[in-house]
Image 1 (cartoon, rainbow, N blue to C red):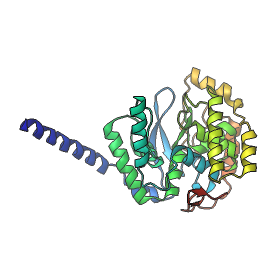
Image 2 (cartoon, rainbow, N blue to C red):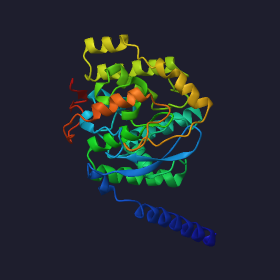
Image 3 (tube, one colour):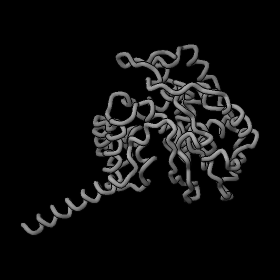
Image 4 (cartoon, rainbow, N blue to C red):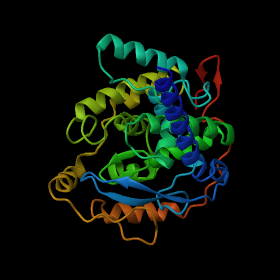
Length: 311
């Protein structure tokens, strides 16, 4: 019995040493502080193949936090991680609620990853669902919260989220679905993109489940109204708006039925992807030359006792 316990202790120690060593070999979190920082990660297309993707200003779709509407930031925060400005990378309360829910439903469907954890995973880790990856994710999320502002974390998160077939980041998503830069998105369009995040490939794919996406975007608009991001008039106007995404129906169907040869959307030197209208790219590139102010480290909107200031 003593030998078994000893072996278990040795195995556990060796495992944590392995995790610690692999974390030590990763790029330092402090590099992310630099606004000019760019790095290349691997992203997966809808056929399961990996492609290089540039994160940072060298990506032509990169959108700095100062150019992202408050409605876009808050739509994602309120829908995905309501305690984003209160936790230090790990939401203990959300974890407890997820465990309770999964035990009641006898499933493992509810996750409790914060925006910081998801950002750490997207930037540094694989998508494998293992205990090792989760431990690394938790540690990296904690380190990111120590090194970066909340504004910088949400900036990274919004620029790497998946929104379609080789459509990563809200800059590309805004052009792909609406033919406009992120700064020109309406509250309904912001809520629409945020509504897709849990499952843009199937569950919240607007071309497969448009009604489901619209219903969730209605819920997100309600959260924006409840928290003071939208006034009553703005809220009602947003509810009445119907996002025009039908113009891309045929192109998305073609992407799904016939695997194309993808070009990385990561560099301005690359040719536009086959799935994106060339006129959209021209509009986006012309808009990109307009000088923009540097993002600040302040929150997208101020919270006073749980209430968001109206934009």
